[in-house]
Image (cartoon, rainbow, N blue to C red; front, top):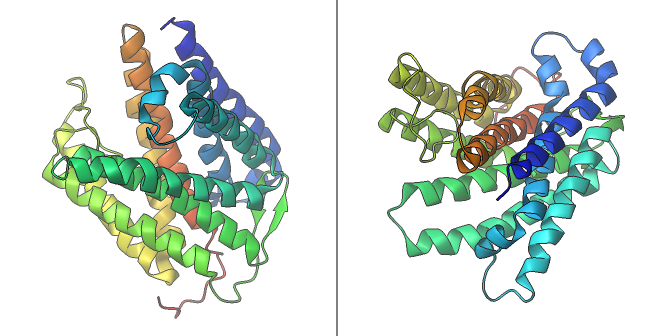
Length: 305
């Protein structure tokens, strides 16, 4: 694998980030406080899609191993998904056909869970990492589903931002999306507390680097945020605030933990792993922020689940 592979993966994500932030400049100017983060939730969700899309194209012969053996022309599907992810990234970043894109992304991620991750998890029932990967992709699909449901309930798109609409009752897709994300967050939170030696964020197999001070403390605090955020998301009144806080934490972890890990990585495989953790964590944070954006600020104080 040539070093340029990692460069193209990262360049793709950065390009979509820049394009998305430029397209969302009006929404950023209009938003206040942490609502600015919610305003660019779609952009933070889109950029990793572009990075992973390019990864599918340049590492297709490696990724083909994840395609179910029953699928015909397996390499074609790897490249097809890669192109689809890149197209979806620009669609979300530019605000073009966002509802259709979000719907198709939700279907795609749910198919990944059913066709790839569930069989893998069933074959290795006691491997928590495999289950966490399944839950991760499930949350990606749930975030996209919440966005599609929100847009289907009367929200308007202006450039790359989602404009708030009146809350005339929660769309079923939004409800399903936020419940899935909430459950995943609570499961992840418990795991981060039980296994604090692993890097916080999406609890996979990477140990927290030795240069991080108090690694167990950060894992414990992140776990508490995930559990608290999950509970808040289940309560419609607090859903937006809870999801925004979790999205903020995941974004900060991306910038201050996983980006330095990537920059300090040595060797092509280590750099690829670092890049995957950067975009993976940002994508997870973006999915949670999509749930936040699906809950208008005007939600009634007395509203319950």
